[in-house]
Image (cartoon, rainbow over all chains, first blue to last red; front, side, top):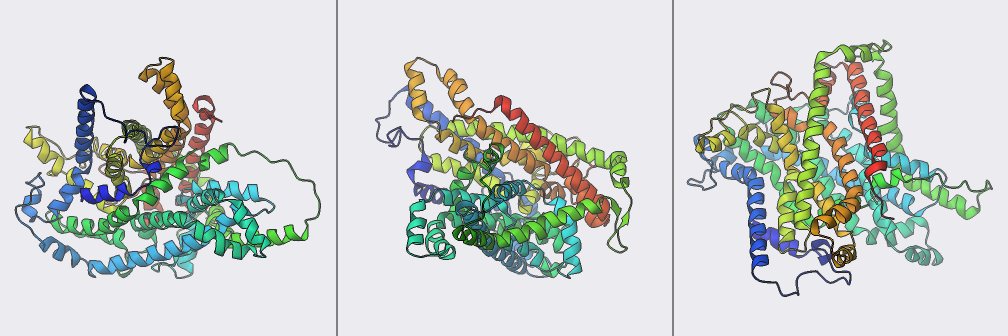
Length: 311
Length: 314
């Protein structure tokens, strides 16, 4: 696992990977490293960083190992060494609820995919208008958009619930996906605006002179260039939607419609404290998609966080 | 520039002369609103409409079965006398104002250690970042329930060194602490933002300071920290807003009760119980508006205070 992580990050462009000299070259690589005290200090630093990282990840690793242990061992063994290899927990956990766990994963996947498509389409359209077009009230709308990023969901969820339940949409995925189709995840609008602002305007101008309308400029010029921002949006939407619990708990009360987080939590309630093994097994299963997205998409994750956080 | 930076420095532009729009401008305006159509619909139907509705509902008694009944300020008066609600505020404030600073200190410390063009930077960054991706999930809350449980991992480890643990989650005096630890554990995301901020500080500042004989400590205090204040501010505001809305961990760890003895009863958890277990929609709406006001006030105070300690380079 660790080598994979290393290989993945090695592909990051140097600008993300380390500070540079003012002339743009990486600061340390080509320089001869001084020996002696400096080298020893560096070694100690690396050791401390590794130990600290290990301590941080220990609960996760321990959960993974414990999910492969018989139940009586989970409460006895604190180490990471596997003496037995028990796949039984996974079989039991998978079939512990009314439907096999795969059913909930499919449900989650539907919500995730719908949310991703919604965010990609609606947020990129809005971002293009804010970043490139002139219209009256642009500043006002832009400020409103920024403020909605910080709006707590609680202040809209009660009326949303009332309306959606009157439409008969509770226990469907519509309340979870529809808002994404309408660009309510304003964070991504902002992320894309930032990205479009960084693209040279000359491209738009050239296309306009060639007779392209705004929609054509958007689809032919801007969209292909903003693929990195779309990738970041996809990955964040995946992780946040997969993890989202509050709204899924509220809108999905029929066990058939449960998504992974809601199913997992109903599993917690229905399990006796003695069967942590199968609970751990399904927890691992539920974390696996996020972990995979993290492995393959961390370049975009890191960039996404870094660019929106920058001043 | 971050969303906060944009908001805090937005100025009212000079009003253009009032003249009829040219044809090209009219066309651009029409196109703009087409592009904005989904977002505008969402703003109206999913955000502002429901906000207005919940403001109205907050002055009513409504249980979904009978039509809402106007009761004026009764919900707000009831909130001030509701001991469980006041307690949930206390729990939430404790959580926010203890765990967020700790989390940010950890994030900054690690970012400083990592920002020296060192080997394996990407590897460490990944390790420290991973928990903040997973931390919000139900699965991690499940794990926390076990490791801080009576015979959980922590107590097993403590037993190895001869310390007798306790039921960290079952004990009202420590249950909230386990949730704070969970929040601190997710310091990776702010750490990445700090790393990006550190990278924006031109190295020539340090070079110049070295030439002038400034010590490392002096450089840290006079260059790094001042130039990093906008990032610290950004992280602070974002994490505080996020922490006020924490829900999942408390819900799963306490089995939905906010116990033991309401010691993990976050404000949002109490709101959920009132609104979606007891279906007191009016009261829950009033609570939601109180939460919005609290968050707005703290964000506003942060902005005011930032004038005195945040330093913008440009």
